[in-house]
Length: 164
Image 1 (cartoon, rainbow, N blue to C red):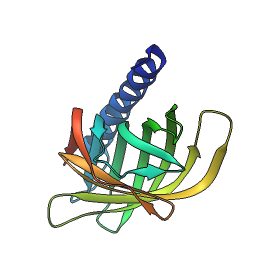
Image 2 (tube, helix red, strand yellow):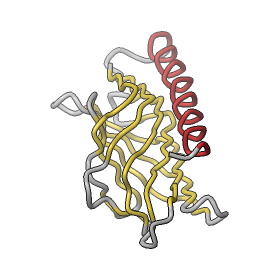
Image 3 (cartoon, rainbow, N blue to C red):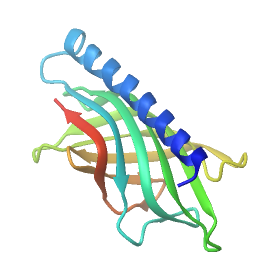
């Protein structure tokens, strides 16, 4: 792992921790009865087969701070850096910064939330805006849909996810 990649992951995990603390603070003081708080600052591992924008994905770091209302509305942020390699074997990151707009607490204990995002596909200035995303999150990992691409479920490897 390169020094730049480690620094990027540290920044994302730190950002996620700040979001998580903010989300829990908001959920404890402002949210209505029955609302669900989501706080995450973690890293995940993709099984083989995860490809997005031509990048074969291997790992991710992500942060989330979300409040999901009982009516299906939600507020918060989701950010992830998806790390992988191109077909030529070059390391490449994809960054997604999402604004959460709706969500639900599922009967199996997971949560699902969605919204629109900005996606930096290559850290080269190729930025896509208004990209829809959906996350299904459990305490052990998450499944991410970017646009119409459903990525394989990531297994949690570092950090933590709190759903309450």
